[in-house]
Image (cartoon, rainbow, N blue to C red; front, side, top):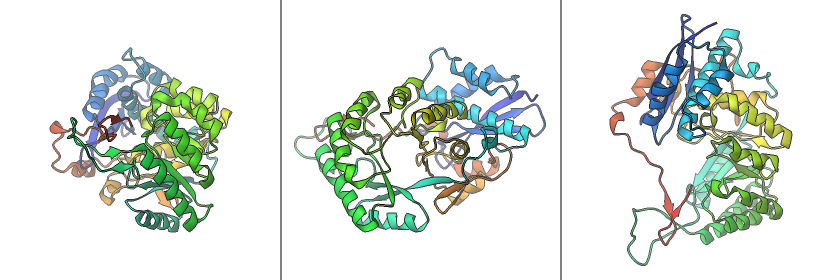
Length: 403
């Protein structure tokens, strides 16, 4: 069997935020790639891989994916952190890529084979005005999307207000007013339903901006508009409030973008308090844990909607699509759109057609990285001075809004 000879990290994209892990074996030309991208602390992810995981795994049988995952999971003693799981994900995906190449089969065939012909995806429509939003929805509908996420000017849009009163004691931020938001979002859906009818499926991302009582109120107000799902209605610290939401609202709930701990999603699924699980494959620990999560979801009637995010890379997306192809608990797949130069650097990426993602039939993940073109994507980016913290909103009184 092939043994792990080298694990290296390749940073790419215009800002250096993409981290592609390449696991190289002792068999000539046999390697796999995975995604360990993190926009906010990429150097930390690279350090975990290079200092902790790679020395631990060199010489290991590359086929022992489950044992390697369990080894990485406890390798730093403290576990269930987003940085460790991101680093693990890159290696885990690469090992599945290798296993598929050795078997001569796409990864989804190793997961049980196809249960669908292609993967339905949802697009992101955004507009600072209702008119702009409707134009984007119409554009995506014409492209064949049956499910579309709709936002009024980004996360929290519809709830931003002008500053006033005393000078702020805090760094500049957009000011979010809950009452304004709870008024604007049902009005947005009323306009969309009038124009597009009830058959087009809409989602909306609250991005955890609301208080628990405000979240319950908004979900109830949206019931008449039959959303496909309402995303991240509550902060991860307040997920027990989903019991109250379910008592009072029929709007489907999608949760889990920030989940990394296995006990965060389990009570919500087991008690049927949510309708969709939303983890990002490269944040949850890779393909290995996500196929288990999907199996648990199937048992409780909960569906998957693996998270992508506009900053994510083609390798994570294709890993999610391989899972989507093989699991019965699939719901919908969030999509990313990549620039032409980015597509050229990742030959074999998933193809979008009529609102669906399509895989090729190449062995493994079916995607590769052209390291020369990936290096060109970086351009003159100074990786030594990388600093991109998440942008936070505040309430009118200056209190931070937790995403």
